[in-house]
Structures are given as structure tokens and as C-alpha cells.
Image 1: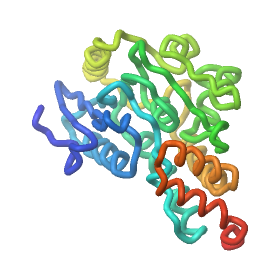
Image 2: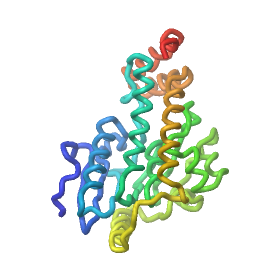
Image 3: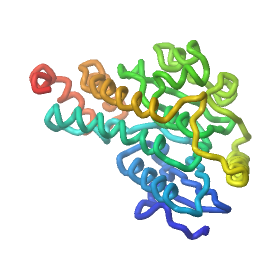
Image 4: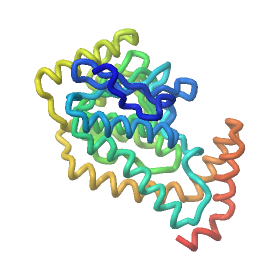
Length: 281
């Protein structure tokens, strides 16, 4: 079963292996901090679908290669200039389908966070059966700093996992970025291991799941129907925030500071012309 190909035509972005009923899907762009470009997201979504539909796969491990788990969604590489209504629809659909890839997977998923995790890579992890992390991992959801709203069902799910106070510390202006130990103590994740033991421990846990017939379920008692509804609502709110002047100006400034002049120009153009195109929404 080790030769089962789950990565399709995208081994550049993800690698896959299967052992004793466990499919391991590994993000494989360490030079880009495993950032979620459209290509990366398409690649791991395809791997999830194939693992979910293969009868010999009983559990899934999702992890990253390199020093980062994931730097999150690459906004500069996903938002393009188009008609405002089309752009809003694209943002809504893109965000909703991204998290549905996790929510609708029928096989139990264990996320092994091998380093810093940011944004959607954090919120999506909490929609799986369990999350473990290496000691060097950190968890950041800087939505308030970006001028956007929570996504990935975090508006309700974070408080259930770690209490309202800690949820607001992460999602609000404080921008709390817990270490692996702090995240474990708060209830965001369920285990912490030495960096060089993480994947070994993940495989051990997943094989125990296979042996015990672990089923797909959600943490903190959340239910699929509610999470799907919240994801759809958050996706609309997120699109509205993305199309706001404050977010566009900040993204342009940030990307320019990183010498990513072409995507920065896109955001600056959208920001400057917003008084005109916003009438078309």
C-alpha cells in the first residue's frame, strides 16, 4: 500500500505515504513556509479526497515539511482584480470550500503541527479529530490585526476548545500567539512532543485509531451541520472584510514592505479605486 498515489499530479506541493491503513499527507514547500497558495490548497484537497475515498485508508495524518507547519493563506496570490461581484463570490466560495475540505472528510484526521502555524492553518486544524504539535510550534490567528473577521468556524469553536477568554486573546486585538505548551494547557491542542519525535508519535496515535475503529468526529462536542452553517456565514463576512478599505490598504503596505511589488500594486489599486467599484457590489 505504500505505493498508493494520493498526491496526483502535485508532488511539488504535497507528498503522501500510506502505512497500515494510515495516509500521511505532508505539505512540501518548506522554502515558502508551506504557505497556502491556490496550488498548495488544490494539492492537499485532492489528496484528502483520494484518501477519503480509498477503502484501505482508515485514518489521515496532515503535517508539514521543514521548520514551519504553514504560514497560512497567501492572500497576495489568491485575490485578483475582477468585477466586484465576481471577486466577492470568489472569496466566499474559496473560503467556504477550503474548510469544507476538512469538515466533509469522512476519515478521522490527526494534525501534526511541526512548527509555527498561522491563520487558516490553525483554524482548519481544530476542525479535525485531534491536533498534536512539536515543542517549537506556535499558533497565531492575527485576524484582528489584519482587519478581518474570524474564519474556519473559530468564531464559535475556539471558545468551546479553550474558553471565551483565551479565544478572545487569540482572535482579538491582543493577538495572543501561544506556544505549543500554552496551546496544550489552554485546550487548543491535545499533545506536545519533541520535534524529532512528532511524526513517529503521530503515526503511533493514528495506528491506534485504526486498531480501535476511530470515527470522524469534532472536538469540544461541535456538530457537522452547525460547523457547515457557521463556515458559510463566516465566509460571507470574510469577503465583506476583505473588500473593505482598511484591509486593502494594509495588505498593500505589508506586501510592499516584503518587496512583493506586483501583488502590492493590486491591493493599492483596489483600495484607491474602491469609491468607484464598491457601487457595483
